[in-house]
Amino acid sequence: MQNCFDTEKRIRLGIWGLGRGSSFIHAASAVNIDIVAGCDCNENLRERFRKECPDAFITADQNEFLSCKNMDAVLIATYFEDHARHAILALEAGFHVMCEVTSFFTPAEGVRLVEAVEKSGKVYNMLENYPFSKENLYLAKLWKEGFFGEFQYGEFEYLHECRALCYSYNAPGNPPVEPGDVAHSWRSWLDFHYYNTHSLGPLMKITGLRPVEVCAFPEKVALPGYLPGSGMSKPCPSLIRMSNGGVMRNLCGATTNDSPTGKRLWGTRAAAESLGHGLELRIGANGKGLKTRIEPQWPELGELAATAGHGGGDFWELYYFAREILTGEAAPWNIYDACDVTLAGIMAVRSHEANGKPMEIPDFRRSDVREHYRHDQDAMHRPFNPAEIFPVSHDPAQTGAFNSLMLNLIQYATLLRKACDGAKIYAQIPDGETRLEVIRALNQLLQQLPEMIDARSQAKKLVDTYPECPAADALRSAMILAEPEILNADLPEKLRQKLAELLRA
Ligand SMILES: NC(=O)c1ccc[n+]([C@@H]2O[C@H](COP(=O)([O-])OP(=O)(O)OC[C@H]3O[C@@H](n4cnc5c(N)ncnc54)[C@H](O)[C@@H]3O)[C@@H](O)[C@H]2O)c1
Image (cartoon, rainbow, N blue to C red):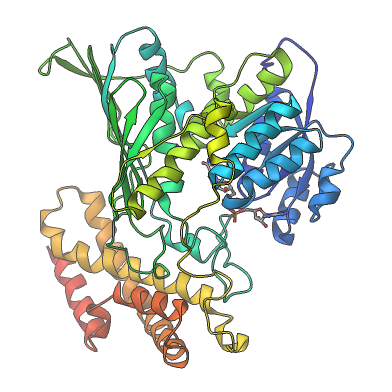
């Protein structure tokens, strides 16, 4: 195996939160990291981890985990709003910390976290991976060489429609959240502005600039199939002024067209654009300059990175963390940069709650600024309690299948829309493979129609029993996704006719 560092020294790592946390197991060994412990309250995730790391210490109990004597560092991938609390516990227990995005949920927590990191003398890295894709690392290298000149304007996107994750775990097979009548602890309601790091993070790391002010209009149109008022159900655009006076549009959220890495970037000497079909550069310091597609190259160790998740980003996160511990060379996401990006999300939420009022993004490197936010515990208003989406008096025997039902409704509605909308535009689809996909969807829909109609009647029954609760609103809006077709008694016959017609064409 390739050795990344000029030392035999190893780092003993414990993983806290074995969903996303487990995706780092594969890449660890090559960067001198041994996985020695894992902690999760979910038994299935502990079992999966046991198979991958049979010699590791495994527990459901966080106190037992943090008392581990043979551990040097902790990777935190627990619930979104718990990161600061858990990171502080781990630092106080004497461990280096890597923590998933974002670093904290309120400015007051941020102040406590910065102070805990400073006091501990330990390494703290935030795990924002998108800046470390092949494309973004290459752009950062060119930027550092002065290729782009000064930053003028940018548009970065992380659009990820993850409606099903309101009702299921982000684990293989996406099993329904247990028990079946509670929603996911944070993915069901969180304002997507908080989850801003995958789009703002790359711009910060390419240009070396920090965000200083943010402005976000409220977006009120939600996608169907989410719980009512969910902040995850819509696009969340914000405009951010960067420290050199340039401006970026940060677009995160959920839409009907995912764009997890879309970007456009303008400097005073050159521009870059990547909208899902490779990277293009415009050179010549001129609006009509030479536009060319380019193939970015990995830096050294890139071949190793390419085998890890998120386009190699997961490898580089582990690599930089290990490098900082083993050699002292600073990693890209120290606590202060983590504060910049985390606070940009917190302030974007405040801006849209204030109808678009611009909000300053404080610099937590300065202790006098931190002082001002020491007691600032304001967070978004939660539209519902994910553990109470049915009335208190509900009968679990009736409601226990809610999450499975939502997942089925979403899956069936997606299939119906693909088949019926595909049939409408079929004649204008130029390529054979996509046409075939529409035919396959129509066929599948015909086969699954009886199950779909049954799921719809189960949903209607549950809505009629508990009409006034967030769960009923979610069921109603998921049903709308498949309308009006599903309400038509002749649908099977119409689908058969359509299929025959398209196959003849
Ligand atoms: N950077 C990325 O690309 C990326 C991708 C996915 C998730 N994430 C982040 O990773 C984190 C985890 O996400 P996830 O997808 O695994 O979903 P998740 O939030 O459902 O997983 C959290 C896990 O932590 C466990 N947990 C929570 N509190 C615990 C405690 N006190 N003790 C023991 N176990 C506890 C839960 O049982 C659960 O398995 C989130 O904050 C998310 O933002 C980042």
